[in-house]
Length: 313
Ligand SMILES: [Mn+2]
Image 1 (cartoon, rainbow, N blue to C red):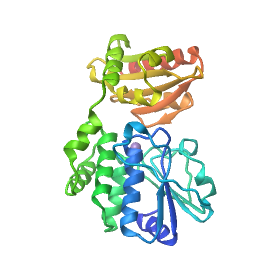
Image 2: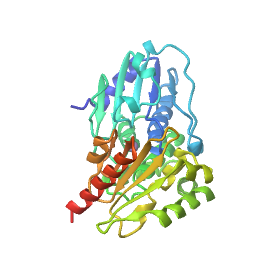
Image 3: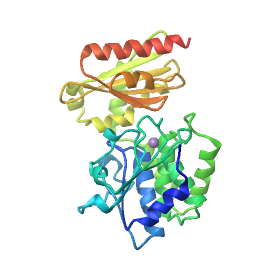
Image 4: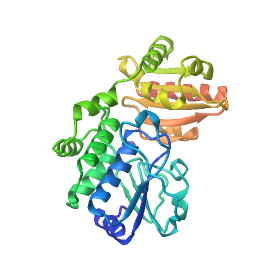
């Protein structure tokens, strides 16, 4: 059962120090919801100390920057955005929090937090934060609107994915009333550098597509080194196989320095999060992540993906 926005705002009022967190390897929705909420709270509660902490992801530095918190969290309220389960939270500071709030749009598999607001029909947590601020008549600064808009276009693939609802478009249009440059933001989010272009070319050239429309490609450490890419930089090419008509669901196996494979899975309509859950992962119905600890497990995941696609035929 969800708490209400009013109950969450009551808790925010109760605390002088608030720390906002999100998941590791942040994407625009993680940063957009986390820092969008921070900007909103800064604007409405200037007397409070409010921090957004976590790894400063260099590929998303155009969006915002993290704060440093060096104090004792035992008197703090900690709000975690966009993070389905506790091991995925960036940072350990939540463990010491006096009060913990979870705000998310992934399936609620790990029901953590003293207060919880989970809506898995929301396109993004940025959409939820926008709803929260508008329905409670909180001031949204332009910088906050920009971050929430970035989160929404990030998680919906610029309103392309089926998670885009009438509500999503409504909130996007509300955010569009604020003063920030949507064209520049859209270009920052959708353009990529030559390294990424070469990675996409590699994926198109080397991916395997089964007769039923399952696709996969493996990116080895040797390849990543030769292309001068870090694992986080491969995320920008995760949608690439989906541009092909014949492809229904796909997996990108990214070899890690320790030899195991991080698996990025996506699908157009067929749920694939069950496969991810069986292989040390999880996520959304159509966008999940998993891990393969041997070549055999990698082959198993590929087989399960092919089966999922065939079953739907
Ligand atoms: Mn999200």
